[in-house]
Structure formats: structure tokens, C-alpha cells
Image (cartoon, rainbow, N blue to C red; front, side):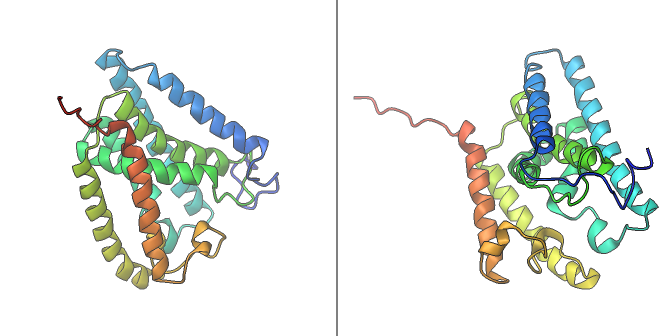
Length: 239
């Protein structure tokens, strides 16, 4: 158990594309396929599932903060829930319990692509299977993605093109607020003050601030792809 929660982990590191990576993705895929079968089930059963998912995601994220605090590794410049995924992970529990439309829009249009990208290329470093951090990462980000898909395709909540506009305006307002806060804290929440030190897709883009425009373009493309299932077919013109 001590090794499971160790800060200086001596076990096998996480490797992209390894068996432990593929296994986690397959487990998440299986979970979502099972949950999709709840479509059309009773509200009482679906409410129990939503509540269970909310509790799991909140407990999992709280344990991440407690683990860092226990090892004196918690700091305001990188542990506040101000990164996109961390914000939406906490909000996903609220969305599951309330089925709030605005939260659903945020989680489906922003959380699903952000979580998907992170699950494909997680920044786990030395914390491979079976370390606590390995499980914590895939539970938190996996359930963020699951929440967006579950509320959309099981609970029947639907984004609209107005949703896209609201989400675009909202995230840009948050970015405007985050830049001075990052300067104050010495942080880089939302990655808008500078490129991360670790290798990332941002390395392909021009220096600050131009790379932010590329981030926005990628985000817009992701949103448009997620709107494809809800695009209305063109009406045929009567002859």
C-alpha cells in the first residue's frame, strides 16, 4: 500500500502506447458501451448511475489533492482547479446530479475533447501501473469524457449552435481573467501565459502569443466535430 501511494515511485514508468496505456483506454471504452445500454431505462436507475458517477469523480479528484498535500507537493501555482480539465472534472459531478444545460454544453463541447486528448497522451511520467496516480488520472479524465457522452446520448441532452457561441464566449472570458491571475500566482493555467516545459503539440506552433490562436482553432475544430451528430440534414426543395 505504501508503494501504491509513494511520491517517489520506483515501479515501472508510464509508457505511451504500452499495454497499460491500451488497457486503460479499452476499460474506459467498455464502461461507455455499458452505460449506453441504459438509454431508455427507468429514471430511478439512471439517477442512481448519475449519482454514483458524481461521487466517484469527486472522491477521486479530492484524493489527488489530498495525496499532494500529504507529500507537501500541493501549491497554488499548479494545483488549483483552474486548468480546463480540472475545472470541468469538478463541474461534471454537478452536471450529473442536476442535468444543468449550461454545464452539459461546457462538458460536452470542451470537456470531451480535452479529456480525450489527455487520455491519449497523459502526463504521468514515472507513475505507471499500478500506482495511485495512474488510476486517479484515468478515473478523473475518463469520467469527464464519460459524463459528456452519457448526458448527451443516454440522458438525451443536446447541444445547439447557440451552445457553441456561448461556450466560445465563455472560455475566452475565462482566458482574459486567467492571464493576470497567472502573472500573480506564477502559474500557467489554461496554458495561455507560455508554452509548457514538457513536450506538447504547442511546440509545433509559433511563440507566445500567436500559439494561442492555434489553440483556439484546434478547439473550434473539436467543437465542430462534436456537433456533427446534431447537424440537421438540408431540406429538399419541392419540385
